[in-house]
Structures are given as C-alpha cells and as structure tokens.
Image (cartoon, rainbow over all chains, first blue to last red; front, side, top):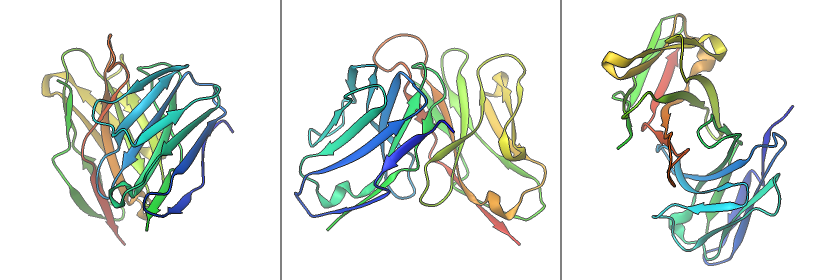
Length: 112
Length: 117
C-alpha cells in the first residue's frame, strides 16, 4: 500500500543534542510537510517542500531545519533540542498544494 | 483570514448513539474542507473531504459531513457510534489560490470524543 512512513516512531534525545527525524513516502507526491503537535493541540505547520522548493513558516524557530534529498524522503533536523521541543512530529504529503494531505504515524520526541 | 472553529472541546456519547461534531469556518471563497481523525499516539487519518459538488459527502468508517455555505459549517455525523470511534477529530480548511500560504491547512482545535459502553 502507498503510504507515508516515519522513523523512528519514538525518539529520545538529550537537551542540546542534535536529532534527525525521517519521513519517506511511496505516494510520489510533490509536496511534503512537517508539523509539530503538542498535547491536546492541533498540528502546527513548521515548513513544507513543493518539489525542491522549501517554504518555511515565519514563526518556525531557526533551530528547526529540513532537507529533501529526493522526492521520496524528507528529514527534520533539530539542531539543539530544548525541553519545549518535546512533541509529536508529523510528516504529511499531498499531490498538489491544495489537495488533501496524507499523514504519517508521527514520531514522538522526548527531550531529557 | 482563514480560520476553523470547533466549539466542542470534548463530547461524550454512548455506544450506538448518534454523533454530530460541529465545525464552522471562515474563508473568502468556496473552501476545501476536511475532517481528520487521530487516535492516541497516531497520525491523522483523513475521514472525508469536500471540494465541490454534492454538499453531503460520505467518508470512511460510516461518517458523513454536510457542507452548508449559508451557515459556514461542515459538521461531521455518524448515525451509530462504535467504541472504536473514540479519538480526536480535527476539522480543517486548506488555503487555495496563490501565494506562499497556498496549501496551508488551517485546523480547528479538535474535539475529543469519548464513547461509553
């Protein structure tokens, strides 16, 4: 089945230690998104790629970076995680920018 | 500006009872609307969507939603709730048109559904 895959599902990192979250898709979608979701809140968009075109949200901290080496993969890098970055990180894809988005299962990040 | 309002933070229903989750949106043109469901510790699953055409849309798991332009609403319904429907439900509208915000999903704050046996 075509899908959005996120690895790992659970990630524990230390305060200030860089961490990378991975997302891959078999849908061949043009657009890939990264969201941060904290407990009992709606997902918050961090950035997205339309093909190789990167779009950062204005309020996304500089601590968060992203890479998309090819159509299938997209990475979220957190350079120096703080306790406030503990959250669920969701990857999503869509064929077109205004189409429905398909979400991965998420990566639960814990910062100790 | 686009926005989505889900007025109910938490709803509790008995298994087998009917369900309606409310969603109101603010958008300048005909919106693209979605309902997503999220089980604990999981990603979001698309239940249904409205782009155009028939205002009553059918989704997965027996859910349906009705787009009412006059009320700026897109309420989600299910005639008989199952215990497995307990989850968080998000209504969302996507920004169409041009500009850097094209494609951005605007979510409501979510409605947590509890189902009593």
